[in-house]
Length: 227
Image (cartoon, rainbow, N blue to C red; front, side):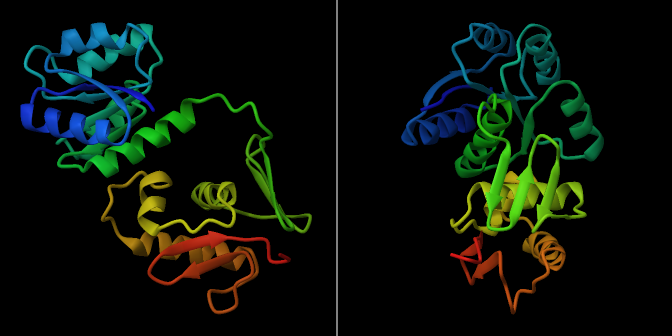
């Protein structure tokens, strides 16, 4: 269970999101005003804050700055402002992630999971091993059978995400949400292209897979080829 604060002035959206998150087992509190929301956010009671921008008392971007001045609580910004410059401005101001309206509760919950993973301290082993594949998250390096893999940043993130879930089928829409941080319903071709590049660097193809296997209509999984 996660304690979530939703700062949203639209009653329909606020009630719907609170209800859906509560149905998923989360402890949800809401505010329809920025200043009240900021005060709540700074109590330390919440694991994550969902912050609307178009609030009636002050702009959500200003509320974000107030929160960030004294707290590192993860903040997911909810906005209808979908231009790139605005997104960059919000991330630079301290937002941990953002969702574009309209969004579903499933999409929001995926973003919440993602920011909590990124904000949680990793006290475990940063090295992941799957067969001859070794991924060192701290060093941002991956090797295959002792040979370094020349991966782009996104290929490394994709490989790491799959390796952390070795043996589990992961849907393409989950990859879009968690690796690319795009809304559900985005272009699957983005994932397909990167999987193709990743397979090539792993010395395999979709027709003759070793590590990366596709389950048609479901998703992909990373496996130890020797098991």
